[in-house]
Length: 110
Image (cartoon, rainbow, N blue to C red; front, side, top):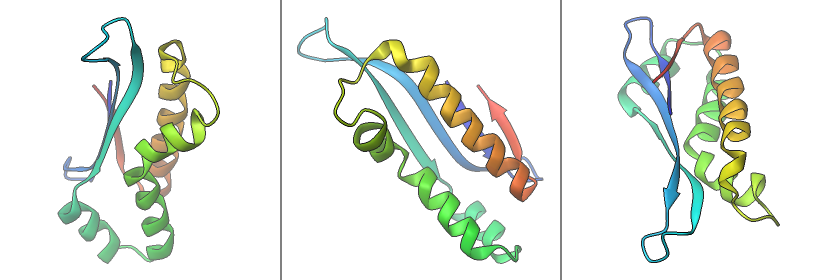
């Protein structure tokens, strides 16, 4: 699943892709992986045209660090269990919807 934050012009500002990956060497091992990215041009436009600059910086920094959050916080001390996929997606959706509402952005799932 891919979650997007989009500008009023429908340009992607940030996205996160969440999926279950199979280990290349041992196909019996599966785990949750994600890739998050922030489009610097669209992010910069949002930042320049908004008074909540420090909040925006913090929120989008959190988005760019989501892979670290997954491995170092969410699964800290536990095994990365693919049965937790829906729980991870639910947390990410909530985060993206809150940010979309806060900055009047569009939220899209694919």
